[in-house]
Each structure stands twice: as C-alpha cells, then as structure tokens.
Image 1 (cartoon, rainbow, N blue to C red):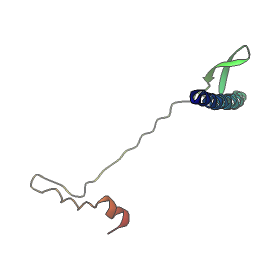
Image 2: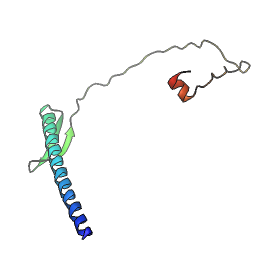
Image 3: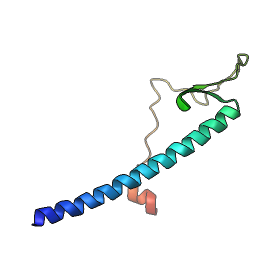
Image 4: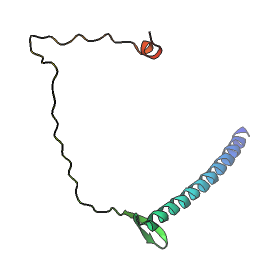
Amino acid sequence: MGVVAGWLITHGYAQRSSQELRREAESLRHLTTLILRALEEADFVELNREDGKIIGIAFKRPVSDAVSVADNVKTKQDTERTEESPAPEPTERRTFWSRLFGS
C-alpha cells in the first residue's frame, strides 16, 4: 500500500514539474523568437525559415578596411645585473591570514 501511495505522490509532482518546464520552455522560445526578429529588422542577422519556423541564422558583419597599428617602444634598464652581482633577496612572504587581517 505504501508503494502505491508513494508512486501516486511522486507521479503527481513529476506531472506538475513537467507542465511547469513546458510552460517555461515555451516562454523562452517566444522571447528568443522576438529577439531574433528584432535583430533581423535591425539588419544584424538573416533568419532562415521553413514553414514559418526559424531553422537557421546567419550573422551579418560589416566589411571594413583592415587597420594597422604600430608603435615604437624604447626600454631602459635601471641597473645591470652580472654574474658577480647576486639577485636581490626575496621579501618575506606573508600568510593569507596576515594579508587578510593585517599584522
């Protein structure tokens, strides 16, 4: 008897969840269609349709001339390091908690 009651309760929740999911999917499908139509009217995309349903999308990109950017950078090293000059000593590492709360 308990198995049957459990199945009935589970079945009821599953049916309700399924209907809710279908409503949500239909709402999202409608919103997506509205957005795609707006993009098509703004001439950003071209929609492919079959029997009134959107089956594909092609993005339109404006073609522009190639742009070239160049720059000349000069660097200056403040100090020279040689094999005889040792690397600077590493600073003491602070733990996570001391960095977080300061000390």
